[in-house]
Image 1 (spheres, chains in turn blue, purple, yellow, brown):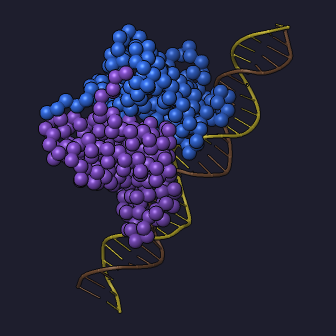
Image 2 (cartoon, protein in one colour; image 1 turned 180 degrees about the vertical axis):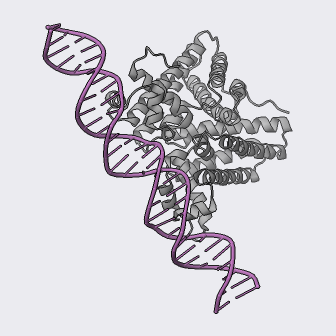
Image 3 (cartoon, chains in turn cyan, yellow, purple, blue; image 1 turned 120 degrees about the horizontal axis):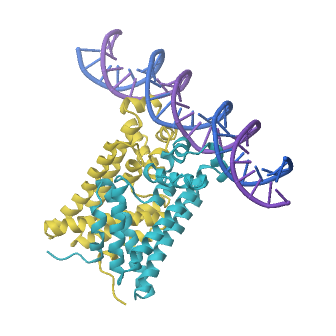
Length: 189
Length: 189
DNA sequence: TCATGACTGGACCAATCGGTCTATTCCTGT
DNA sequence: ACAGGAATAGACCGATTGGTCCAGTCATGA
């Protein structure tokens, strides 16, 4: 999984992102982490002097960047915002299936269950805002007004977060795939 | 906070539900737990022979039951499903504000970041399904067909889950209060 | 009044936690 | 060739973890 040509630092970040996402911040010990990254303890504290919290923040940023790329990719060939959302949800569903049906939002797993740290929460807010801003920019590019663009992007964010939760509980990516339907109002009887 | 007339078992469950909700399953040690519940270790293993996992499952069920009550209360005097959703979201926002602006979904905090245990995930699925079923029953009572009722209830669930996540990151209950707007389609221009 | 089981209280345990420290190896510029 | 910093390797540490165990206390029914 982890390319062996990757630098130790990158291997640590990837291992952290993957393990934290599944078990949560406190659910992963340094031993698991170092074993997964095939790195000794000295390297961890060389690259991340403040230790586990430092690494966790780096992992959260890395995971967030991947999500930003996924959003951009999904909207690349879209002609409407709704089309982009549909593509994004299908991509998320595919990733969900690939990884053993357990993944929720990586940011939430890393930053919310982390230490009492206010910095962690602020990071989560900043990273989430990045997702919403990226979505809003895509919406504007596709012709929406700034207000509607932001509204639609925030709606997309909330649906994906909620969908991740339900998908995880059910161990089924179906919820994610059907998320785009929720952009439409409920049809009567 | 914990009424001292409560039985030791109930104090343990409440303490567990409260602490796990904020810090996640692995983020709470037995020491914190027992201090909060004002109970000795012997009592814990008397009431919950299998220890921490046992207690966590009991706490999740307790928290889930509170949510079921909250849903029922919210729909009690509603004349439409949308009205009930609005009341529920406002109640959740109020609770969110009361408790220090950090609470997400208690079930997710307890069961998702818990041990690798398949039972935990199955519990989460069962409890979440209870919420959705309760919402669907309320919708049917208010005149919706079974299919639409379930659809609307599942939409409500997803929105609340997503809203909790964003509210937590922003430390603001506003998201929760504005959730009912997302039942409507995005207004153009 | 005493016997019995439910419950409490806390000492104690091995294992693991996150983190420190120093010795060594590797890489790069000169 | 060699100097020197970057990076690796892992022994080691005190604190804390979840869990065990048993002596003591309590309530209740006979």
